[in-house]
Image (tube, rainbow, N blue to C red; front, side, top):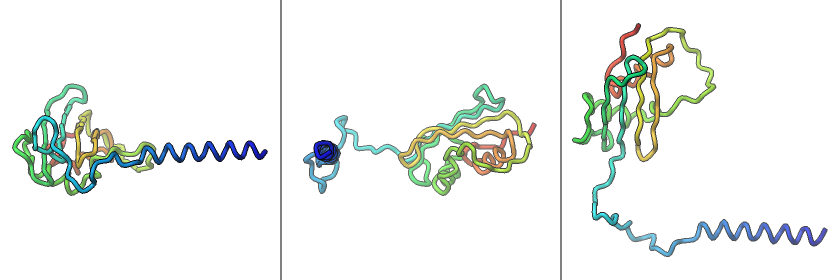
Length: 158
């Protein structure tokens, strides 16, 4: 019994030591700024870089936009017809791009808005985004409506 306890304690101590070693400082000064990349580029990546793909028929891409923002301001590389409002929207309501949690008991009307699908992917404030919008029921229609500045327009209800 004594030997088992000793072995258990030794194992725990070794595990703790391994964990602490993984957290050790790499020797760099925490007060010095990060060095620029080896490519020499001092340009930082934008905080928001999103691709918006619309499939009006649910299958074939009918529109594609790129939205690049610094905060709520669009950057010149944006290829979005409503970039200013779309940047304002994603900055003010980033939760809009969070994927809905499966199994959530939302009561959705059984209103069919058509086969349209909108997919938004990329990064928002350094976080990966991959959000699909559809108009298959009342909840989907409501989500799409809230994202209209980003998705450009509400698909025609069929």
